[in-house]
Image (cartoon, rainbow, N blue to C red; front, side, top):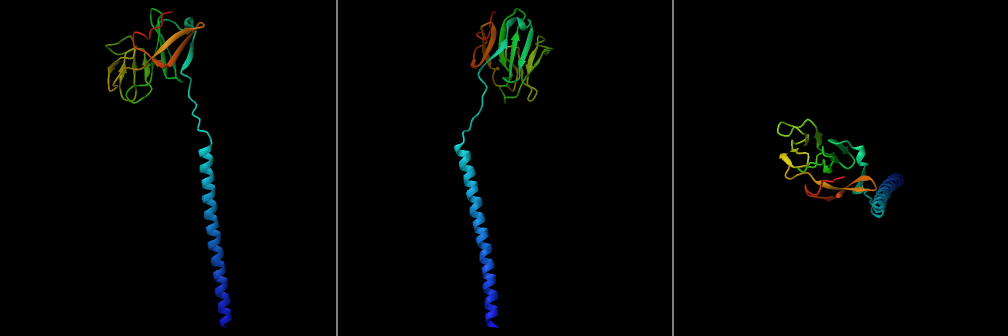
Length: 168
């Protein structure tokens, strides 16, 4: 009788040993797969595709005087004023970076049109000057050039209000 109990205990120990062996090997396998995944992510290149800083708007004659063209990809408003001059202003609000909108009907003090931030209420003039806050500074103004008969905006080069005008 004693041998029968010993055999039963041995078989229980053996199944317990197998169970813990399987659990231990599974944990090692999961850890190895996790470390391989982390290693693969570390070794593979992290490429952030950024837009080029320069983009073409089109030919000057394609934009009528006293109009605004919006480029949503670059978040830039391109203006052609009544006298035919061009300039480009960022639509990214200087308060928290929200995308501002062109409002052609303007407000009482600026009926010629304003740029408004729909999120926090900042209002800017056509040239990007702050009319009402909370924006701490004017909108960025970008250099415009005429290259090969095409208007080109360079978002990598911010300029002053005097330098932003392109006379064609």
